[in-house]
Structure formats: C-alpha cells, structure tokens
Length: 574
Image (cartoon, rainbow, N blue to C red; front, side):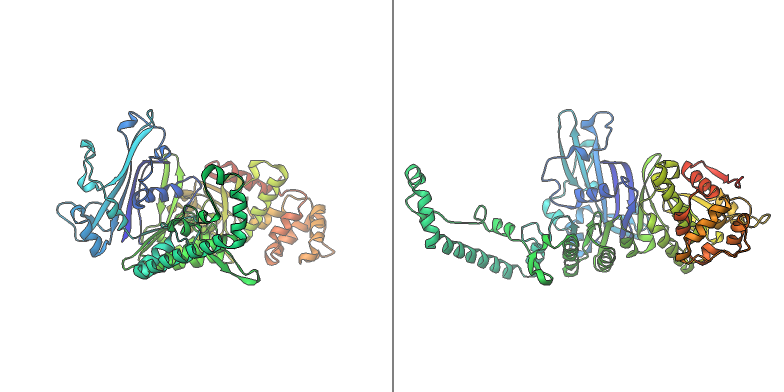
C-alpha cells in the first residue's frame, strides 16, 4: 500500500492544498510552511486512535469564515497498491484513478487507470459552543451536502499497514508500543505464554518479598500505629506489593528497556542519549516493515533531529529501501541525500499562503545527473527562503565571511545574509563559473526557492550570454564593476598601507611576502595578478584580518540584503 495523494482543506495552517506523493517522499522546506501539520493531517486519517479523543480546535484553519458549525475541515488521503486483502476489505468503496495525476479516471476509464480508495477525515465544529465531532469516512459513499457519511470502521482503519515513528520511548511493551505489535505478530501464542509466565513470576516474587520477616516486622509496626484499630487490619499478611494497579498492563508499562553499552554497564535506553533512543525508534519501524507481508507505510516528522549526521543518513536509507513507502519530513540535508531528487517535496511560504514544490520527473540521464549535483549544493539551503548563486567557492567563502563579520560588528540586518533568509550557493566542483549558474537557478526555482545571483564582470565588452539568461530567471542580479571578480571585490578600495599590514598578519597562514619593490599603491594589483587569495585558499582568513571593509564586497552584500528586484550594477570604489 502507498499514499498517492493528500488533499487538505482548512486544517491547521493549510487553507487548501493537494500534494501528490511519489513512491517514497522526503518533505523539507521553510519553517512554519507545514511539514509537521502535514504529518498530523496524515495521522488524523491513518491512525485508528485519532478520533478516540475530542476534536482539537487548533486543527481548524483560522480565521473561520461564515457559519463555523457548517464548515468541515477535511483531510482526504488516496491509497494505491492496496493488495488483495485490502481490496477485498474496501471492495464497496474502490474507485478508478489515473495512476499519474491521481485524479478520478471517470466512467470511460483510462489506459493507465488503477484501483484505489479514498479516506477522508472531517471535522464539524461549533466555535461558539466549543463542541463538535470528527470522523473518517469513505468519500465515494458519502454525500456531504446531505450530511450523509459512510464512516470507516475501527477494524478497517486498523487493517491499514501504517507505522508512525513517534518521539515516545523505544522498545515499549505497552499495548500501543511498536515492539508489542512486533512480538504479537511474530508468534501470538508464544507471546501470550511468556506474558502469563512473567505475570506469575512477578506475583510470586512480590509475594516472597511481602512475606519476608524483615518486611512483615516493619509492616506490623506500621499497622499497630493506627490502621489495625481503625480498619481491622490484623497483620502484615493483608498487605502485598504490586506494579501500579496490579494488572499485567500496568506491569508492562512499568518495564523499561535497558542496554549495555561500554563500561557503564546496563542502563535504561532513555539514559543512553538521544541518538541511541532515536536509532531504536527507527529500527522498530524498519523491523515492522521487514516482517509485514504487505508494504508498510512509515511516516515520521522531523526525522533525524535526534541523530547525528551519518546516523540520520544511514537510517533514512534503510527506511527508504525497506518500507513499502517512507514519508519523512526533515530539517537535515543528510536525510534528503537518502532519497532520489524527484522524491523531494519542498514546502514554502508564498504571498498566497503555503505552497509545495517538487522536481518534475525526467528520463534523461544527463538531466538526472545534473539535478543530483545541483541538489547536493542546494541541500545546505533546504530551510532557507532565498538562495544567492555565486560563481565559485571563493565567492561563497568571501562574501559569507564578510557578511558574518559585518553583522557581528554592527548588528545591522543590512549586512546579515542569514538574518534576511539568504544562503550563498556555488556550483559543484572547485572551479565553478557563470555558465553553470542558469541550470542551478532553474532547479532552485522548480523547488520553490527565491533566486538571486552575483556575477563577475571581469571581461569588459564581452558580457557572458549567461548574464542575460540569469537576469530573466532571477528576481535579483548583482553585477560587479568592470574588471572585477570576487578577489578584486575583497581587495580594491582598501588603502595600501592597510593591505600591507594584512599581508604581514597572514604570513603564518601561508600568505606570501610582498616583493620589496612593490609600493603601497601597487599592492592591490600585485595580489590580484598573482591570484593570491584563490591559490592559497585565504578568502575567509583575509576577511577576518580586514581592518576596513572592502567597499565593493560590502556593496554586494548590502544589495543582496536590500533585495531590490532586477539588475543591480555595483559601482567601482571611488
């Protein structure tokens, strides 16, 4: 089974959305753009426990317009690849869908039509009365206009192969725990037997404890201090010790997994750190997916938050290869790397509300390779609103370091790229170049980024054709002065005597000494002609050693942060 589409109307921060999901999906994007709300929407439909409690008023999109008692919050999920068992179970509610668009195939059918089922979670809530109802129904057999709904039974919802990875502790034996489900599915008869034996052994052990002389003697002293007279409790034999309410369920809730790692010996997993806990939580879902006869859909919010970089990528890759379908939201680039480029869905804010973006499918191998390379560069900006494309690594390092230093020194947002939601991105590889930027811009736009670019102007009279293409693609294009690349932007305009002091201060980091014959007013051109910063990788160190901000580079950062649209031609230093 797999989730093919999710349609949301008036749920939490979504006024309206329709998301078509690939075979596996990783959801990333800007903060507050709906990643967690999306997982909660799936939970309302697919988790059988979601309708056991009262309606959460915060699930209703605000502001409420019109008569709130008549409005329905809706989350509709379309399921494909049901398998024989689920197709039989939902036989009266099956529909034909276009396998590509996930729209109804209609009465005439389609050459690539498939059978699926829609399940819809709905809320009817009276805001003024603070009361309402919620349920899951079959839209194919319901008529909202007539307030007629064919509700999905609890048995039908429990038959769905769904596994949510929660923040709850791993390896729990309680009834709702993933481990408990795995144990029961493995051999229910044998598992029932060991539960009974555990219950009997614990009762026997607590009985022995309660009847031990050292315990009964103290209990008798307590009884003789009032309870014996008031309640008629004659001796300690009337007192026993049990887990919570004495039930097996209470005992299983009390039992917590412990793990032996290193010299510390056996410690509760919750004491082993967030990485260990998170790995075991994911491992439970992977084990469930491996054991299931039909593909399990594994859903997790903020996947990788409790894991280190390598563990998050490894566990995401395991889920991707094991689950029938994995749907993960994340803030971590490493998690996205475990998925194909067209499996990434990016959630963003727009002027019209929340929106979702995904790269279109392509069968061209060269295009897929280019996308993958570009995407690897964009991963660092997954949660950023705006990317500023630059021609090479030195540009990103130099402008980035200068922005950070100016912002730290002045505290002014006009110098803070991060404060303005901007991330500098260079082409893959060590050389870069302007000709690679248009392809990067196209991929970034397709993923919903706002795109700006900074380009050199080091060949007067021969403006690269890519500049015009970038001007059409980007919301802002910052063009450096004539005969200026990033090194010149970081050097020119600084007095010669200060340049000399900077060169001397960087000697221990590999900065070559200036020839004796180079005068102060010739230092800038000497450094540029020898390409000192690029050859010796001294861009960030140079910025840190500056005592005066270079005017051209500062103007570039100010233009980026100001965000004025169109082409911005930076003037040369006076």
